[in-house]
Length: 270
Image 1 (cartoon, rainbow, N blue to C red):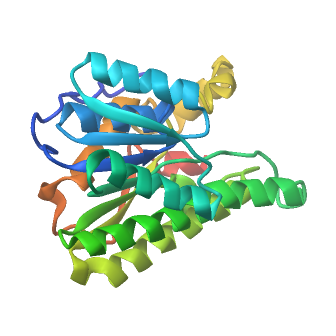
Image 2 (image 1 turned 45 degrees about the vertical axis):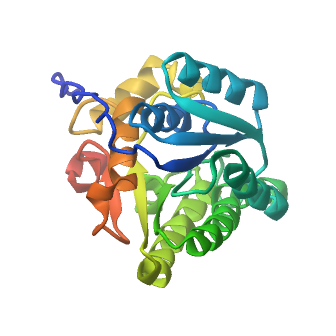
């Protein structure tokens, strides 16, 4: 058991870094998406939160507004092409355009390849990969019309790099998201649009909170992370804000691994 943990990073928004920018965050009602939406608003962006859970999305919008930020909510299912188009159209209608797309919406179904049902497969690929593809298409078409470039930030996972046990469909979907990000990086750079993948190793969110309530599961996870802990949502949001900013204008097609050193450590394989 690892006894020492790294301290959380300094979580301070950079005021004005995203001033005047307009962002869409899919799956932004809770968890990592909510953290990103909050961080973007704190740094000056106007944010459209697209989520199937509209009541939760609206609550996040109220929290952002109470803190002085600007945000709106939209009920949408990214796995539907028409919903993806509606997300971007709504952003244009409410804020006047789009500068940043964060493909964060995602679900996870546990199971091996043999255990994965057609319904599990279609649901996982539909949200985690196809949804990101549809939203990217719609967002980039609008960015090109505007002629001022843009940022695509895709929220992947270290499961795109290493196959995760009993997460067959999830790992495959996230691997596809990695290639989507890279292809977009090549295709759209001449339009001033960059595309990068942010790969967290894990964080305590609503998606996995029930699993992590088991102390033995949490202890095993932390034991295999050199940093000795999972990332905070705020740390992941800070990395996303950097990739969305002008500071990252020359960063394109990268896979930013956010894992506390797990992917380069022999601890992972024990």
